[in-house]
Structure formats: C-alpha cells, structure tokens
Image 1 (cartoon, rainbow, N blue to C red):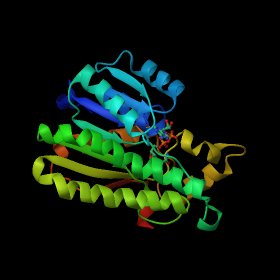
Image 2 (image 1 turned 120 degrees about the horizontal axis):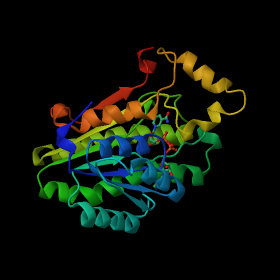
Image 3 (image 1 turned 45 degrees about the horizontal axis):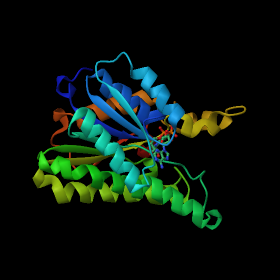
Image 4 (image 1 turned 60 degrees about the vertical axis):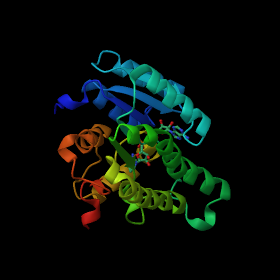
Length: 254
Ligand code: NAD
C-alpha cells in the first residue's frame, strides 16, 4: 500500500512506544511522513526510534504523559519546531483495567483509566486542534475498542472509557466538520500487543480461547490496525466522518 500524500506531512502519535502506536509510527514514516511519538515509556520509544531510523520519514520521540497538559504542550511545540504544523493526530495511548468489575474497581483505578484513555485524548486534541483549524484541515483518529461498543472487552472503567471515546469522537467531528476537520475512531478486537501479554503468559490458554471465540479464528497483528489507519487518515477516506471502524475478526457480528 503506498500513499503519495503522506510525504512531508506531520503526524502526532500518542502511545508510540509499543503495540499499535508503534506500528502506526512505522507505517506513517514508511510513507514519508514525519512522526512525533509521545509516550511515557522511554525504552519503548528508543525501540521505535531504532525501527524507524532507515525509513523515508523522520521519527522524533518525546517522553511525556498524555494526562499532563504541560507535557503535551512541550511535545506539540517540539513537533512544530522540527516538522511544522500537525496534519494528523492519532490518539492511541491507552491502558487496560484487567477486566475489573465495578465493585472491585478502586477510585484510583477508575481515575487512572479514565484519565489516560479519555481525558488524555481530550487534552491532546485540544492542544493540536487549533493549528488544524488555522490550516482548515486536520485528521484525528481516536483509539476506541470493541469495548467501546459492547461489554466483555474490558472491565467497568475500560469499557466506560472506550464508549466515551466514541461519543467524544462523534461530537468532535460534528463541531468542527465545517472547518475542515475529520475525526473518526478505530475499534480493534484482539490485537497481539504487550497490552495483552498476560493472555499469552503461562500455557497461553487465554490467548487460545480468545482466538477460538473470534470468528476469524486468530489474533491480529498491530500492523493490521496501522494499515487501516493509513487508509482512514488518507484522502481516500474523505467522506468518512464521525464513525467507528471496527477491526475485530468478526467479533461484533456474533
Ligand atoms: P500497548 O500497551 O502495547 O501500548 C500502549 C502505549 O500507551 C504504551 O507504550 C504505553 O506506555 C502508552 N501509555 C500508557 N499510558 C500513557 C500515558 N499516560 N501517556 C503516554 N503514553 C501512555 O497497547 P496497545 O495494544 O498497542 O494499545 C494501544 C491502544 O489500542 C490503546 O488505546 C488500547 O486501549 C487500544 N486497543 C488495543 C487492543 C488490543 O487488543 N491490543 C484492542 C482494542 C483497543
């Protein structure tokens, strides 16, 4: 898959140190886009830097927390200084709640999951959106989940946060569509990343069960979500607005 349009574009990706965010960073840099990857995990960011070093586009790492406005401002400034204005924002950073039901969810866990998954998406969007409005063009893709559409893909906090991301994405698109902004969400099913390492641990029976329960009969690779992102952020998807693209091996068809 090759997209000429990404050459020289600036892409801001949160969660770029691992899994889906790292695959997105590699995919966009492969297409010639310059990528600023923001993440808490410095070692993971160093790996992304290593994996992108020979690609056409540049990758610049920024260690920072998406729940801290001041750190987001530093990251956005760094991206602007290095690459110019941001054209594409991928809000991919997220954390799980270990499938915890509400009565077992502590306030701390609730606050942290909602803060990273939902408030982080809001905070980063609000720092990037003004420059997109100035250039009358911008694409925002927020990482939801099948847990944003049905129960069972997470616990109380994770499922609430992912449902909220879908609502936030629709409203974002609705409010700014006339000013050249296009916002959508992606809802992955079972993607094999470090987030799901526990499922593959020990005898791997949980991972086997997930594959068996998925109509496609397997887990997906993060690169498959990155490919969908390349399409969804492109001009080919210009009429796709405020929606949720599932990539779940048929999980939601059941
Ligand atoms: P991952 O754990 O491999 O990567 C998530 C990244 O986010 C990590 O590098 C982590 O350091 C970073 N991060 C966490 N908190 C942060 C913070 N406060 N500030 C900055 N960075 C932070 O997970 P993944 O599987 O690649 O998940 C990426 C996104 O996709 C998440 O939003 C997740 O909810 C979503 N998702 C994943 C799956 C799946 O099966 N893997 C399914 C549906 C949705």
